[in-house]
Image 1 (cartoon, rainbow, N blue to C red):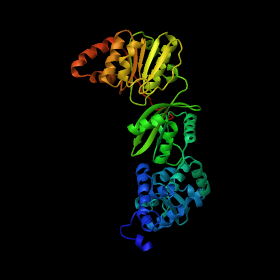
Image 2 (spheres, helix red, strand yellow; image 1 turned 180 degrees about the vertical axis):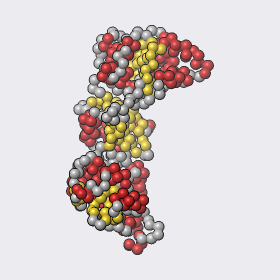
Image 3 (spheres, rainbow, N blue to C red; image 1 turned 30 degrees about the vertical axis):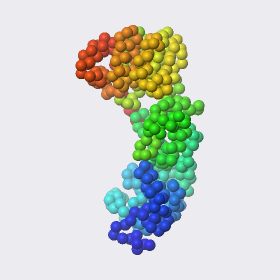
Image 4 (spheres, rainbow, N blue to C red; image 1 turned 90 degrees about the vertical axis):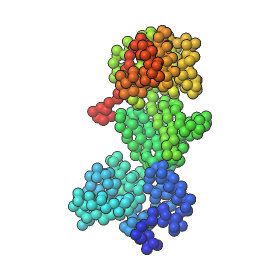
Length: 447
């Protein structure tokens, strides 16, 4: 077998395993399909799918590359060896030092990466003797090192860490575990996608949790855990779904589920339990003066993900608290739940309470609104009705995806045909109270 493998053009590992009857061609096809979704190494994927054992993988990796194979779960590395290489170099080259004497024994996923070997030899002044290790084990080791969990590298500790965080079977309880991590981290977004560990967004940066990469099967289980039967049916037809999800313990989340590379991806945005004040949001308190006007148009403009929705909710809460009026909202989906205070707040969700923003706005004047809140204006018809409402004695609040306040006005005008634009400019001049452009910026601590 060794002579067959050691040819000028070496066959791929999956092909070798099929050739020697370890797996079937169909098993390899299934594994390759998952690899296209998760971007992992085929050997680790075959282990995850239960097609081969770690020992089998090690045996064939050794034969394929012609170097010894090592099971990282069964080795210990003394601190002096473990600290031979700086963490940034371990991460950059995806390697792990195992032993040092007259040469450095280096664990690698690809021991034929001669560029990396040459660079490391130059940096350390030591000859490198590579050994091959499974990709999943090496990635788990690097995650543990990065999380500072391993002061001394012990294989049994690494194996236990992988066992503790293994999420190959997922149910509704696992969603709660991730939502708890999001709540405790004070993060804003939880992102789940096949091929990467669950990730939290803290401020403007993404942080991956110390967990194995999610598989397409994991993602299906997560989707089923947070969607009802009707939502699942719609998702299967449209391949995308926007809705709000409430967990009894961890609160309310805005959810977008979508298909990518034939698997499911999920974004959950945490909605605060209470609506923060302008001061808590770090916004100018002068905004309150505009929110308490009886008539006109207020637009909140920013790129996606820069806090338009929570600013809009804060302004609605001010009106709800300070005025006695009828507030009607059109939202997709409803994120912040407003209690009736001095005003009545009627919140209508697109897709559930009305087919579209345009349809909801067509009939809104019959509902005797004083304040109209439009989650987002997306089409000329919605803009036209909003301007008409602002002209006829209503306060209208809405949001726009825009770089800044100036481009927001340009976008409103440009959405209309050229022959209608002069009239729209006149209506904007008569009704526009405020265009408020906002951006999130990174703090000094990079949060």
